[in-house]
Length: 315
Image (cartoon, rainbow, N blue to C red; front, side, top):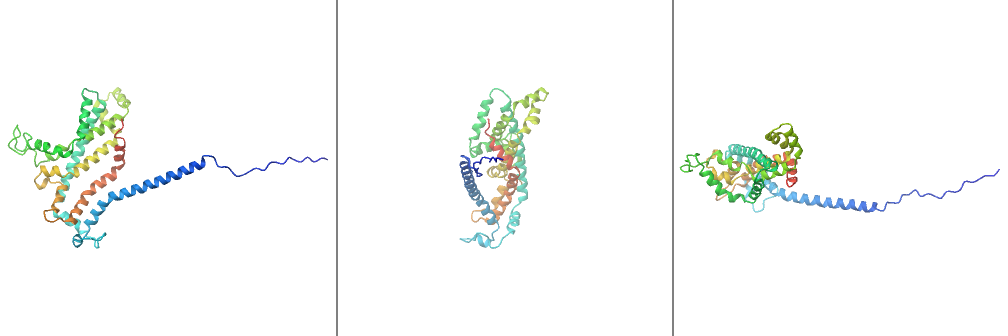
């Protein structure tokens, strides 16, 4: 009986050899993580620099009077003076000032969103003669500094016919001065809001409006019910910026009002400053209270706010 032996097999290597591009991929991932780490550190540093004034405001608002006159006061107050906030509220009728600022800010926000969205829709979707020229005028208006318009606007308000004792030629009275008209109407619509709405309306598919027209929807219905709900980031951005601008406005309310019942909160903060001294702790306490509404609004609408600026330049 002959025994046939099976042929010997060559030894097999169980270890796997790395692919040629694996090491390159690992190096690329490490470099990416390193760059992201550096970017995060840079952003944290920038955020800290931006927060320093707010931290200084809060710390100063809690300092006792004995530390305000020191050449080198401690970084953290030795005793937190929470009574500064209640004293600041008692120094002036801040409830009235806050109410006035809130009414003006809400009025400006509603008027700006409604009227600027209508203008932006017309410039983006309605073809009429002179639309390009009008859009160019709005863009040019963005380049005009705010303070160069103060004097013309004041003269318009002062000589408004048939208001405040004025006749048909705007003479004999005070016009809109020291009234809600002067506080609300001049800031009702901004060129930036019209431009932003126009940019967003231009990005909405035309097919939506055409389908609505085939169904018999009016042009105003297309604007209000079909197209405008598609641009919520633009609405949130314009509303937030308008509210912030109106809430923090100081110069215009100071110029056009003289009675205390029409003063706004930013003007009211000036009671803590005079020619000789400044009550820094009370001033910072009032400023911190005036800042809270804007911080809360931004935290609530920051997603739409960032999205609105991201897509503002599309098309």
